[in-house]
Length: 444
Image (cartoon, rainbow, N blue to C red; front, side):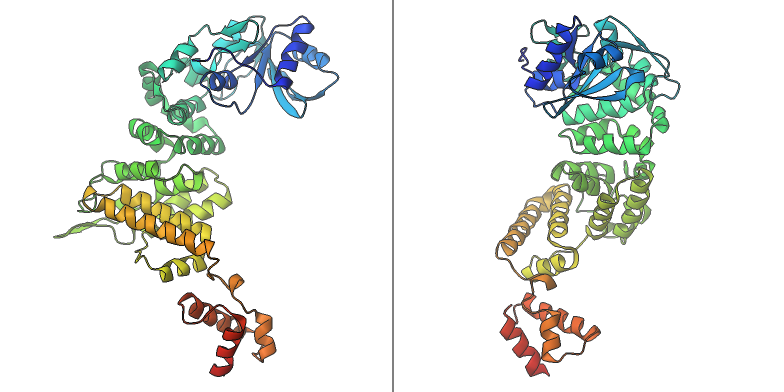
């Protein structure tokens, strides 16, 4: 593991400025964790024994944002880079299981690190002084383990969101959760009821997009169902269908793992079969789930509304869930029609969801169905590359052309444009202005 971290120049300037004024200063938290594992840190945070007013005085020549003075945090902008600098502190009581009611500033870096959530986030570093790691976070980083600093139950009681953060780090970093910490995750999951929907949505989305999402949501299904109770009926629900080797929940998680790690796609995969337990029927051919896509869409709507999901993601996830059960015949004509109805990006995502869905089905037909989905994705890309006409926007004639031809203004314009588009998409007419107008003249 790399034990030397070279901060960006603005961060080094922040450390040097505080040191020159006689204060201790270190980079701390996630940036140390990421740098030690060879990943590019997203944010560089610093900690210091300087009090907030002393931090402001040190950086009087820079733009200073008083981010959270009551909690000891100041943001300093150096060479256009915002750097959060926080005074060493000890947190008081967390009455709301989310934020401390008060903080006490301290001169002890170890005391400051002791209040943090996980050992891999409780390390500090200075280019001259090296790594400060009183809770052996580097060892846990090397072993691939998420463990709380101190007593896990105390850490989660302070801030219930840490329960999901443990699961998120486990998924994103593909780390295991230490046994004592995992026990506390299960035991204290009800604390998530104290957390805002927006924060839960943020953590769950990151978790879903992690490499270990299937593993984490298998091991901690009870925690997921605490914040998304709509999904609980899927667990253990036998599909009794020759196309499926797994219960609904296991199938769902395998579909999540099989789709690209983008928020819309991962959420659509998680929710696509949520309606199955509510419409199950069985006959001599096995289990059936007629109409489950529509029910899944409504469950998805309720779940995402409850988490205050943004409208853009909500609308796209609902569209994909509603249409995920499309029966594909693999023809260019169907692909073009789909693009015309929902747009290229949504059509591409819909086929990706279909591919993930069949990847998580029974092994007997899996390979050929994946190959068919891959073929559709390739042909869809080829249609786009060829600039194929799949929408009125691409049609070689416009409403103005039809008006000039004598078509009455109003509904008839749209009808004729849509007719021409259908004929072009089917290959019955070339997408050429003269050919299209000639056709309309001949039709009268």
